[in-house]
Amino acid sequence: MTAPQSPQGAGGAAAPAASAVGAAPALRGLAPDDLEIRLRADESSRVVVLVLYAVAIGWLLVGSIFGDIASFKLHWPDFLTRQGWLTFGRVRTAHLHAVNYGWATAALIGTSVWLLPRLVHTELKGALTALLGGVLFTIGITVGIVGVLLGVNDGMEWLEANRYAAGPFLVIGGGLVGLSLFRTVAARRAQHLYVSVWYILGAFIWFPMLYVVGKWPTWSGVESAAVNWFFAHNVLGFWLTAMSVGAAYYFIPKVLGRPIYSYQLSVIGFWSLALFYSLNGMHHLVGGPIPTWMVTTSIVASVFMFIPVVATGINLHMTVVGRFGALRHSPTLRFVVLGAIAYTAVSLQGSFTALREVNRVTHFTHWTVAHSHVGGYAFVSFVAFGAMYYVVPRLVGHEWPSVRLVRWHFNTVLAGIAIYVIALTWSGVAQGLALLDARLPFQVSVERSIPGLYGRSLGGLILTVGHLIFAYHFWLMVRMPRGATRRTLPPFHEAQPILYTAEADAARRGAPAPAGASAQRRAEGTA
Amino acid sequence: MIPSSLAVIVATAALTLLAAAALAWAWWRGYFDDLDAQSRVIFEPRDWRLERPWESPVDRLERETTYGAPIAPAPGEWGGAA
Image 1 (spheres, each protein chain N blue to C red):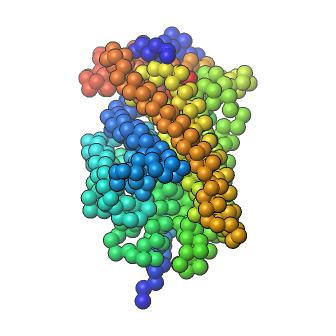
Image 2 (spheres, rainbow over the protein chains, first blue to last red):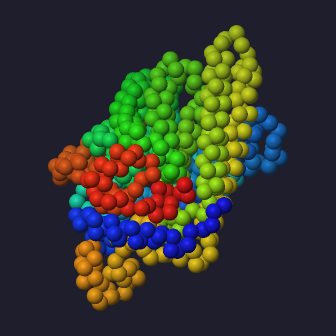
């Protein structure tokens, strides 16, 4: 492990930077007002984001353990069978809720809360409201998962958390965070809305609508199945994907220092997603008892998703092309670029899987589980990890303490998800082909899938190790000695010494600007 | 008799129409004007000048010519302990 950076570490480039300013009079860093806005933006979201990240990592560990238990049960059916709350149906559902709502949602909301004030050049409005919302949302997730473990659930996949016990916390909590974000955008100082803002705002408009429709208490029978998949599919595209793609559109160009390949394509990508994605969910019910035209429409819409996927894929990948060497230098870029690749892969795979001929083999098999983990983990979680590596140092004021832990984290989660997905995809195809062969008994399809299930458990265990490493590193990060964690001036490498002014420092501390600071700055050419 | 598909049809239509209305509104308000400037809104002058270790000499020179002398990155500049 490397030694923690000293508070002075971030300011180490003071001398050359100052001389650089003199060499380029046209570009002298942030204007004082901009710097003040930046400082306030980061400061305003600091507590909310750190709390949400801590909650997210906690749920990641809990969800990983539940996921491993559920996975073991598929090839060791006698594993932990004495307690009702540890049966497969409950543990698997608890895993899904913990990782999708506890981990991914909290991590991406945290990232959005950090990003939005920066993107609109203002501070977070209603930070306390957002914090309260995050706390209530966490309580809702906890209540929902405990309820699931106790056998109290609403019986709809992805919507098992009880609508009366957990629902109010989730609705009010999410609503308060959304309220804070919309107030922030309403108070924006930026003239332009960057594409990430569209994605984040879209997510916070779509999710409440989806949740209300999904949780409406009157659905039953076939209608319930249709609504179930309307919600379950759209929550991926309109919630997790929207926030993840929005984050990727920020971090990739920001680290590389070049605008995205084609901003026009990003606009097309967002609006085609917004207009057509909601039709997709019914492809989960191919062969089901719902009108054929609905399924067919959904399949057509799924293929239509090539447009936003290709637009986003071209943009994110072409921005990196020619600069893949940057991945060696930037863990954030490593995670986010791999996440973007996984987004393209899982989206195209999803479009193909929606086709009836492919679905005939893959439906009701482990293929679907592998597919969902490419989306939920290799895409969404990788982007969340990358975002956290970028954001947390800027909130706590010092660099991650260990290069080695970052590498171990990356290598373990990459190896884990690769083993997981390859094993289950292969297993799913073998299982599906056996199910379609009328000469074979059902037992054969089970036996053929078992090697893949062992691979799934192995991959899951490696992922859990990676998560433990990441959680330990995060814990080290936030508990570093007070002297090291004290926010340094200038704040961690976002405001370099050349950008730092005594006035901005005073503004950050809420003190009056020192006399003569402006004159000194003008004399140095930084006005 | 209400068809079983009605809920999904109505919800899908609502989402699509909402998106279409938002698109029209954004167009009318000029949110798609000057897309090039929008693509650069995430950058500060400092971003253009940071010395990036992965850049080729040609890229570095081009950046220096356009934006001025490079600035040394701070520790962990690129996100995570690299």
